[in-house]
Image (cartoon, rainbow, N blue to C red):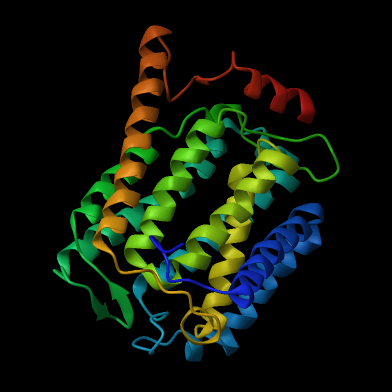
Length: 311
């Protein structure tokens, strides 16, 4: 922890674990029942938009929640959650192939928002670190490196034509071609983004939030990573917009503000995403596939397992 973050004690780790398991629990509640999702991603946000966020996320507030990025991210993620629910619970929609463009599109938009933010942080010229819009930021080559990693992560989104709704009672949105390769590359990119742009909040919005959707994707409901990610991200950002003092005052865990740490984290994200792009486009060219029409990993064990468990 000394390389990435300042040392934290038992209480800090207990709070971190509580955040992790709370996100996973609410994700399960949202995906297990239709009404759970409607309450969490429609009714609650409407109430917060009217009565809470105009105060807690007002422009220029001392916790940095009033930026354009937070507001855009909040509603784009909520739109994703509601759109995925429509695909899951309205049978006629899941059969429309053109509508399957929505999941990759909303995913790409969310990644691109963060890419823009990384590039924006570079333009601040805060080479020694500075508080900008009440968030600590250190500009550097890591912003450019990770922005490129994010772009690669977008162009390697594949196989959305194979998205379908599971036949079990939870009716999950299953994306079999979104394998562990892409998920790990995304996780590393996204952690680097939070470390670069929301540095002193990234102990939660980086580590805890990323793990909260990766564990379900690998061990609880395979093939539904995007659904897990949308749910946990929406839950977290709604919480942050509502309790903006959490990461700064209630349970702060700051980064070490070490330029080497920033560089290493973004370099790792860039290397892994380059490797993914080389591997994936190699498969596309060797097998003469059309990435807009074909699934890339249909022959893999992981793909076949996900399909067999959900048809």
